[in-house]
Every structure is written in structure tokens, then in C-alpha cells.
Image (cartoon, rainbow, N blue to C red; front, side):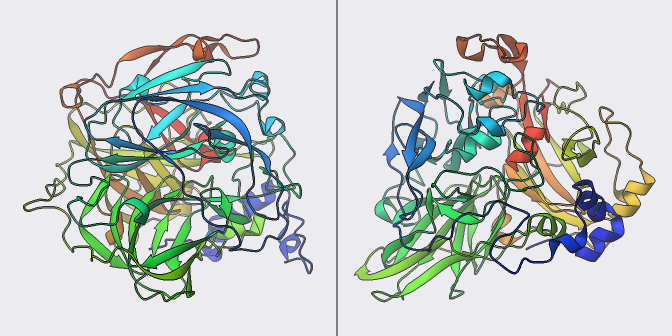
Length: 594
């Protein structure tokens, strides 16, 4: 399912023309250049796809210390090794953490970074980004999708600097799920993750054991592997290039980092040799901005058995799925008909919204992974249709409770002639430091109507909790904006869309069923989700507790006071386009007692 505004609709609202104009760019400028150089962007060197083998990250278990450190990594055989960041001794990305539900795990992260990889790209006008970050980069580790106390959540203001460390205790009070960990330092997340700070965290339980004894006979061991999808841009010397648009000066925030080459597990368009049989791929969209419409080049069907929050009630047979940044999908693919030497590609044809394509010239990146048959027999079982309910399987997903209230929240886009580019992102027309935050009551269920009043899709992520998608519905965006003039930024603005709805609500795709911590919210649509906010008794900890964030125990000149010793409370919710959350399309929220 792909909800996209037509170019005509964008121009009718005036938003598309306004954004292009605000960047100082006229439409005739965007005719495709006759040569390979596109004056809009910084192109990567040409790299032949499918010449490097797909690497599989190592698996780690048990309590341990993981260094956050710099190294050198080669992204392609024709590129030189380049400076990168990684976790736990990996040159780029981090090891896959294999954990067990309801068993505590302690991970200590030591910040051993030197000069920031993208020191010149830091925009100190963003909250949390300081001059000191260029030489002493702060980090924060967020376990995305985890049920964790607020002080263990990787709050964006709870950072630690080089020479400091942070111990995170994860009690894992949830069933098996596909989580991932990544940097979350405020104002720097887009840069730190781009440098390599991300990794998989697979949570197992008595049903999804990670072994041959799992409840459904799903592939395991060498037949289960992570796929971290990230678009990237490179300099001729092989180093990562964070900049996208030539119209935006170095050191200024870019509304969206868009790569022109695809990497999977840190390698540009790799290949992988597969046996005849089933494979289980744990896929995460780890890109800063891009979404993907995934399918196989021969259009063969595959099964979706789970997503963000764990396995679905029933497996979904499909030929394609969509993933926005931060979303995960659990795929089972049958290569039994792939003969020795035969090839099939996992590919993508996701187009950008018209205005983004107009500004950046971004085209779909089709070359993800090429699978080559070995002819050897591998895992030959067939996934069952039913995954939950009945003997030997986990219980069916609970029916969502009746909401006690409906909460309208707005995804908003700002105009600011005092900055370049003169656009920005926000939630409810507020800044991160504004005190008008969401405060749902513990132990209740709410219906959130997420009104996307911008010209592009946003994946919305809530920390701590899961969502269940009800539906999405178009609304008359232009009329909505005209009838509800925006006040100056800093005044809450989230008008009800009820009078402007059009058409019928659209149910979520079958593979979007189940528990989701990140939900795609298309432009010009209202996305309705049910959210259950657990109580302290249910969680076993107080979700509204305060704690002291000490900046890693290292004060330093140039670090803002709120990044040193200060009191924090609650969680955050945000757009998972990393460039947007840094600007910041991110807000605090608290779970208050009833």
C-alpha cells in the first residue's frame, strides 16, 4: 500500500511550490542533466552492484561492554577503506544482540570516539548540537521497541561523551520481538547513525527460540539473518558523504539526507549464496530518510510472519511490502526453486514524493541484494498459516481496548526566513523544549489521530509502547490549512480534521497487523492508531520516574547545561526520519498516574 499525493495535488495546496521556491529553485532548473552529473546533489562514484558478498554481523549474548569507537570500513571493492563508527569492535554497525524475554541483560557502552566524522556538518542551531560536539561527540543508545524504564531508554538528552560510559539494564519484560539499537543523541542522531551507530537486537522466548525448536519450524541458525537497509552517498576516496543538496551550505541542516547508493549490512548492493529452501530475514529500514517498496525481481511470493512487536496471528503471503525508516519486517523466503547459479534480486521501486524528487532528483534504488543459488538443500519446512493461538503457540494478539479518549496530534512543517533552508519540522507546532506535552494516563488506551499536515510521509515512533493501526483516511489538506491558520511556532496547533475528511477509511495492509512501535503516516492523510499506555504495576517500574542525567559524568566547555547534570522525566515520540527528529520533529511525553 503506497499513499502518495500527485504533483497536481501538491501544487494545488501551494505547499509544493512554496517549498521549492523557499529553496531558491525554479522548476525549469530541474530538467534532467544530459550528463551523469546532477547539479542538485553530490553524486557518488559509479559502483558496480553485486560484486561484494553480504556480511553477516556476529552474534553476542550475555552481559558485556561494547565500545562505541571509530575504525575503517570498506563499503565496496572499488572504494578505499574509510573512517566509520561501530559498536562492539565492529568497524561499521554493531553485532546482533541475542537476548531472551524476561531475562535481564546489562550492556555497558563506552564512548571511545574522537573527532566527529561529520564535524563540518553539525548545525549548532539545532537543540542539543554544540560546538563541543565537533571534537567530543556525545552519544545515547536507544533500544528501539524495548519496554524499558525511562532512565534505561536512551533519552536524547541523556548523553555521554568520549571518556564516559553508560550502563543500560534491559529486563526484557515482553515476548519475542525484533528490536534494534541505535544512537539517539539530540541534534546529532542523523549524523551518528549515518556514521554507523546501529545494530540488531533479537529478543527470543519459549516459542521463538532462535533454534530448530521454535514453535513453527521457522528457519534458524545460518538460515536466519539480519538485513540492515541503508542508502548512502560516498566521496571518491570511499568516505561517507553526508551532504545531499548543493543548494544547502555545509554545516546547515538538510531536510532529508538521501543517498544515491544502497547498502545492506554495510556493503553496497551485495550478493549472497543461498541453499534450496527457506530463509528468515529480519529486515530493518535503517535509512535516514528513504522508504522502500520491497519485492523480488521475479515477483515470487514470500511470507511475512512478524513485524516490529513480534509474530503476527497468521502469516501473510505477499509479493511486496513497504518499510519506512525505523520499521522492521520478519520475512520467510523460499529459494527451493533457485537452481545452482541462478540469481534473483531483492529490489525496490519506491518513488519519492513529487516535491522531494523535484528538489533532489532522487530516483528509486533498485539494487539491494542479489541471491545466488548453490543447489545444496537447506531448510525445507513450510511456514504454517497460523502462528498464534492453540496448543504449542503463543496466544492470539489481544483485541485492542476501547479508547478512553481521542487525541489529535499534528505533524507540522514550518517556514522560517531567518534560517537556511527556510523550512523546518515540528509536532503540534511546538519545539522540543515547550512544556505543552502529551500526558496520557497510565493503564488507559487512547485513539491517536495523527494528522499529517506536511507534503511528505513521516514514520511516527513512540518510545515504550506499541500501536495498533486502525485505518488511514485522506483529508482536504489545503482547505484544512486555510480554515485553521497556524499561530507562531510555540503555540499548540492540532485542529481536528473531521470537517475535511474525504473518501472512506483505508484499513492497514495485512503485513501491518499486530504490534507496531513505528507507523507510516502518509502525507495528506489522517492515520488512526490505538495506543495502550501501561501502568506502573503492569510494567514493574514507574514510567513517570525522574532521574539525573549527568552527561556521562564529564562536564566540558561548550556543552549546554542541560546536557550536563540535569533532571529528566518521561519518554519521547518523534518522526523517525532522522533529519526531521533532529530539527526537531520530536516531543517529550509522560505517562501520568490516573
